[in-house]
Structure formats: structure tokens, C-alpha cells
Length: 188
Image 1: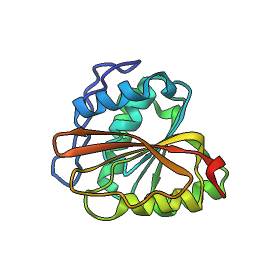
Image 2 (image 1 turned 30 degrees about the vertical axis):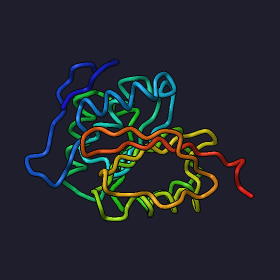
Image 3 (image 1 turned 180 degrees about the horizontal axis):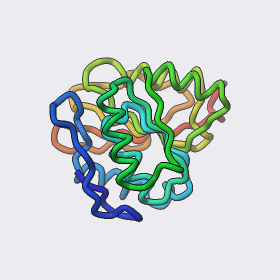
Image 4 (image 1 turned 90 degrees about the vertical axis):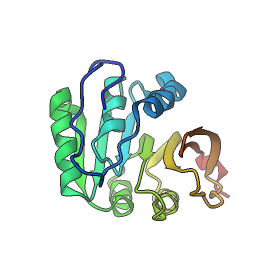
């Protein structure tokens, strides 16, 4: 697992020694960031279920301004911190231990808003729906922001609330990546 391009290009990230964390494959990550393109430059990014910090650090390497990593696992947070240090990205990164859904509420109450939220939770546990509900109730995405969801092919997303619009889905083997646009103007 490596940083694909940008200021930390080619840097090998520290990976888990067990299978409790499932990092996004490099080919999937490269496709995701090709779709996002230059919109990542200057962005504020929320990396939910951060795991190793792979998606957030790729964002940082490509020019994102600020990255907030969230995970419940101490081991995952140790990996994230190690990888932030490897990238020398400490001044642009925040690491928070806790439940992603609860942290979304806290960030909203602090007035934090993000351009991108990456949601790559453990598969088949209902986390995607819980995150969408939390982001609807506690808007932590900026107007025009994106929720980027990675999920198993057999895992479905329920009907989206009016503030969200699925704009693109891509299939990579047994993985689907959804790009969901946040539009506050659709609130009735």
C-alpha cells in the first residue's frame, strides 16, 4: 500500500499485521482519485473508519488542506499516526478516537464542515446507513461536498434522504464505490 501521487508519491504506508483492517486497494484508490480530480486541492477531508489513513493521506498528498481521521480502534489509530508521521503531514492532520457516527455529531456542533467524507467501514454492518443518517441530521459536509462510500457488492444503500444524490457508482471486483453529492438546497 503506497501513496500514488503528489507530495508523498511512492511512500510505502505501514499496513496492519492482521485482517481486522481492510485497506482500500491501490487500483481502487487510484480510480477514486481520478474521478475526484482537482476538487481535492484545498479540500477539508473527513476520513471515517480511517484504518491506516490510506484515503486521507492520499488526499493530503494530492493537495487537500486539512484531514480529520476517525477510528474506534487503538491499533488503527496507531497505524494512522505512524503513516501521518511518515508523510510528515502532522500539521495538516487531526486524529480522533471514537465512533464515527458520534464524532460526526460532535464535529457538526463545533461548526466543522468538510468538502469530502470518505466512508470505508467494515462491510455488512449497517454503518453506511448510520453515517448517511448522521450526516443528514448533523450536516458536516459543505454544500456541494461529497460522501465517498466503499462497500461490498452485495451490500445495498437504502433510499437516500433528499439532501443526498447518488451521482456515480463504480464496481471494482467485489467492491462498489459510490459518489454521493450533498445538496442543502434540496431540503424542503
